[in-house]
Each structure stands twice: as C-alpha cells, then as structure tokens.
Image 1: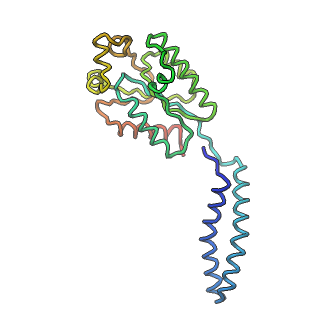
Image 2 (image 1 turned 90 degrees about the vertical axis):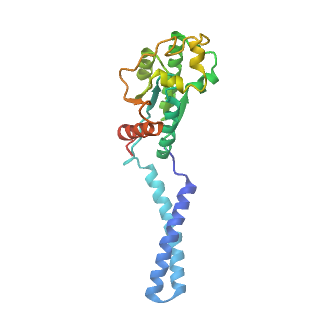
Image 3 (image 1 turned 120 degrees about the vertical axis):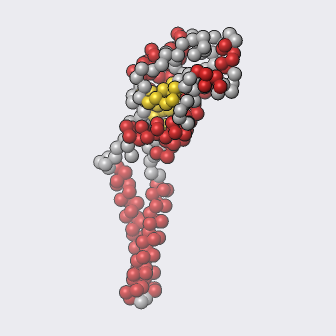
Length: 242
C-alpha cells in the first residue's frame, strides 16, 4: 500500500481549511456585520486548524488499529500457447491497479528474454518453474502480489509453485488447440508441426490440464474482457476485500 507523504497531508489540510474557513468568515460576517473581524477570525482559525490537522494525521498514521493489510497473492495463468493467457493477464493487471496494491506482472517471454538459454525439456521447464516460484516468494516476502502467465504444461511444476508461494490462484485459460492455431500470429504452431520446434506443448509435447484450478476461463466462449472481469471479481471477493 502507499504511505501518506508530509506534502500530501499538508495539501489536504490547506484544501479543507480553505473551504471551512470560508464558511467561518461568512458566519462571523453574518452575525456581526464586520468584514475585518470576519477575516481576522478566519486567519486565526486557518493557521491553528492546519497545525492541529497535520498533528492529528501524524498521530493516526502511527495507530495500527483499524488497518487491514492485504496479504500478497499470486495469480497464475496457465494454458496452451496462444490460448489468450498474456492478453487476459494484462487486462487483469490493469484492472487491479485501481486498488493501489503493490504488484508485479511476470510473463514467460519477459523472463526468457532475460535468461534466453533455459531450454524446453520437461526437466528444463520444471527447473525454470522453481526459479519463478522463488522469485514470486521473494516478492511476496516484501508484500508484493504477482500476476504471472506461463504455459507451465506439467502438473508437477504447477504443484511446486502452489507449495512455494502463498495465496496461489490458478487460472486455467482453456482453448481448443485448433483455435490456438488460428490465433497463431507468430507462426509457432506451424513450425512445431513442421518439426522445427521441439517440446512444443500441444504438438510434440504434452499439456497436462490442471485438476485443481480455482478459475477456468474458456476463451472459445468468453472474450478477454469478460474473462478479466470474472477474475477481478474473484480476487475482490477472496483476497482484496477493500
């Protein structure tokens, strides 16, 4: 969450006092009919009340009673390549920004751009998922939630993520493989079918569907915007609650 800065507290104090003092000046003038007396009363009140308001804000910032911390969560998108994971995850991330939750967006492409020689064998992928799990766990230790999108085709690697992080929410972005091929603007399915890409989930490697997904999104029947709304409502109900 965000800390109130001294400058913001002062600005809030002045904006409130400008309004309140204007009312005070008006009341004094209406009762006594003297503008000089009304202005003097307004000036004295403004200075004293701004100081008192600032002190009052600082005292309440130190009081923990009534504050509720949002526990960090991990929103884990899994599904076949081109199923719509990244698109929906990006939309959800944007929706969650309005709650001002400390949050990071993690996508498989970004990670592989940083660490390009990871590999795509089952062993390589599982090892990679453990690295991602450690990264998410580290972020959560600093009260940062995550929205992550990875094909993560194997159940054992998704289980490892669930065991490593807190409040893990698996979103299975489900799509027929023929639909994924139609969406393939990168041409990766064609390369996999031609044998140019090995260990490609859904073609020459397995994709093991989740058996314990908290949310299932069928992109054959639901738009990305609708899916994002469903996921945001789930988080609002179970984790955000503000």
